[in-house]
Image (cartoon, rainbow, N blue to C red; front, top):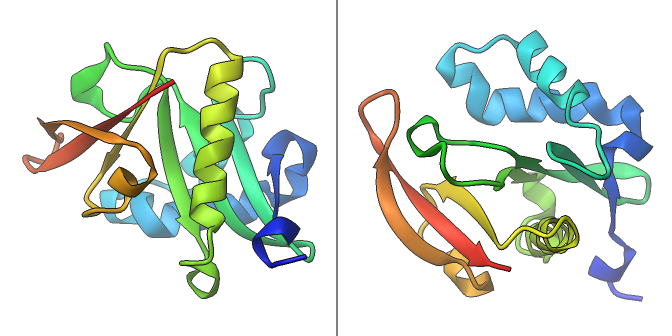
Length: 157
């Protein structure tokens, strides 16, 4: 069995003891620079524990180690309240990047949104030529609250 076949993607609801760990990753990667409190990220994660509605969070585990996280949110961009749901917080530990973990986490989000009967899934990113490789289509550039712009992508379900 190859590496990626050994990676399990599970709902965070099924492994709640990982909430603080993945919340800290999210805080360090995005929220800290926006002056958010770590407790706020933990609170948001605790309220993303669902099976049949959004928000949801998923973790990638390999040999009982959490190696990645992704979320499905109602919104990830204040300027576009009309679009939902959103794939957010896709993050893989550096030593496991470029091994298919991010793609496997994306696939789980896509499957769950299809199961929940959504037509499309959205995300924002600054990455170049990553999401296009997995079927996402550039939608538009949109303003952020800080005066900068981000790219919105859409995945047709």
